[in-house]
Length: 289
Image (cartoon, rainbow, N blue to C red; front, side):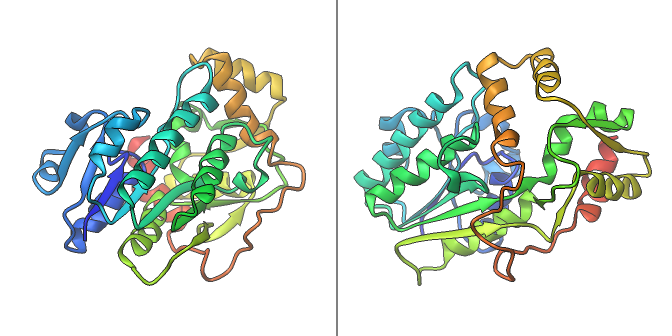
């Protein structure tokens, strides 16, 4: 079975690669910078250096594959949604030109809104483009990554995380490794076709104060959260070096999904995954603090 994997050094992609290797598959990995792959991984994969926003390069890199794991690459530019659109053109071109049998697309909870959810709107656009092709595709509607806390290490060390999400509104928290296991199961299984949507909700829905209490207990560091206004968060994000366009895209992911948003896919045994925030915080976050 020939499987291609994008973003092989990303939070989810690196686990997809490792899981495929354990399953006995030698994946083809599409990497913008192959030098970021660990030497021991480089020996076990077929690497193609490619920009995912270059349709001709992506078509060439995915020739002959049976299944594709696709992540729209993140954008740090002024117009993130335009960058998502460029990646979508590459993906659609590859699926159509190469007749790829199965595509697993890493989407997000909130993509079902289609509009009004900031950066998630870019993922919604990719979903719609694949659906219009009539491709055999699974859209993974993922919850809030545990690893987002690694982007806030200074705040965690200081013991206070500012958020614009309502403190009494729960959201699905999920480990990227669990997303990868779900993705690999779909990539390896040939007994499905058509359009599928599979939510990946993690083990539990948590409010931000509940998550902070769990992280505090697991790391041994006091941690609390404080809700701030949207403009205050904009100032914080701009101070971190984000462009104005990216700031609005990031802010929109929260403002578009708060105030009563309910995911299209309910929590079920199919959408619930095992890794707890406590286990992840103890094993991954604690050593980094």
